Length: 600
View: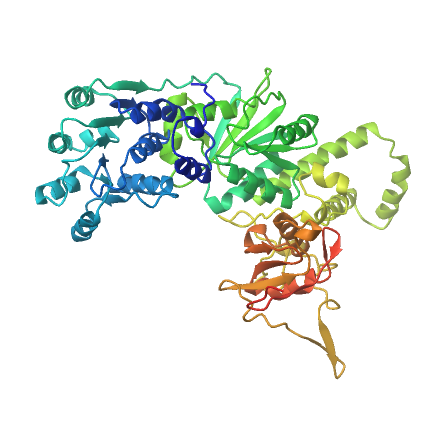
């Protein structure tokens, strides 16, 4: 289904539209586009839709809109098969009610104190979400009545039948008045479901989504199981290994802005694209992407419509798409014009069922792979360097460089020693930003934001700010590649020091009562919005200069003439010493512990 409706076009209230926008969604999913207008009209609806297609909002939005908040009794009831789904549905209702405090929702399910539920019902509830068994308990106790019910929703109806709730469902429906609206959603439509529809619905409208068939066999489809806090590091490693043009898809505008800022702070050439941007900004970003000035484009599904670029090598689904159709549109951005492509999907611990649904509906084979390790990234960089070296040896005149090599050989160094030493120097220079031409080509970012943030995670690498357990020193990449010369953490001559009797004594600043969160230290920076400072500038400068991961940097507050940033307490002394000798956006800065109530 290709439609360009927005929520504001569905005749729903401004409060609901604002809540949906805050949730980050730009347009209704196909099932929402079909179901919301019909339910708003009061029609009975039977919809065939899988979990993860947006069906909860498809019935929740119109149910909310039809509630008369001044009538303090149950007007709608949603039945779901499990306690977990009941809680999820109630939470979705509450998110949609963010800007309305006049409608009350109550989840009721087994395993929770029934007396608490009874007390809540007596206070006046408009919408009940419950499991059939617990709803029947309340009906028999007469603590819940359905005499004035206007709408009944049966969600995951086929699953409720499979779990043996058929008789409970029929009895609950018998309690309800004959004149009512009955909405039924089910992933499948077996005969018992159709029987319930025929018996308890009035001229229902049947809705079924026909998924688009996947016709992109040239695309290698992969997924990686990743916790939320690991996604960015995994993405950076994949980008460094795969290279080329890429698109990164997110489900919300807020996420696009967040990932764009984080990638930019790590030195990647990336920009975001979403529905809040005006046409001139969109055109500017797209022109940079088509011309190759941008390596990657981060976009929502809606914003990506109409993008026609044939040379995209890789698609990354940072968020699992809302449904199979979105998945197909996303990965179809690569593998065009007879070329091969690759698509990665990051799947959280609770999203495996959603991925299986997408695979089933899209008839796609998505293979699970492990996230790349630091070693794999380093090997890839070395391979790229060797490819360039082979090209130089084949195509360039190296006569002028033979004499220095022979001189080293006369000093009893072998050719292997010389070559290995040169490669080591090359990559050390890249790490320090000493070879800007090579840095971007080999996946090492340039300038002050060269920190990639790779961390150990499941044993794949380590944070550059980890301590070496043997001697308490900071190391950047590993114990065997310690940067003793020029590492600001090891320099004795830097920092706030005083001389006492011929011995240097370092004066430690006071990190107590800075007004930070527990375990953090809040710092004052003497520049702010008036100098064009943004959060990514502060994150980039600190990450680039101190080599700590951007994710370890805490809350940032930017005012007109100054800013505040929070740093983990165990890293605060070193960050304080280093940042006082640095610049942000070209301005020399003062980086000092804040006072608890500091507003300067």
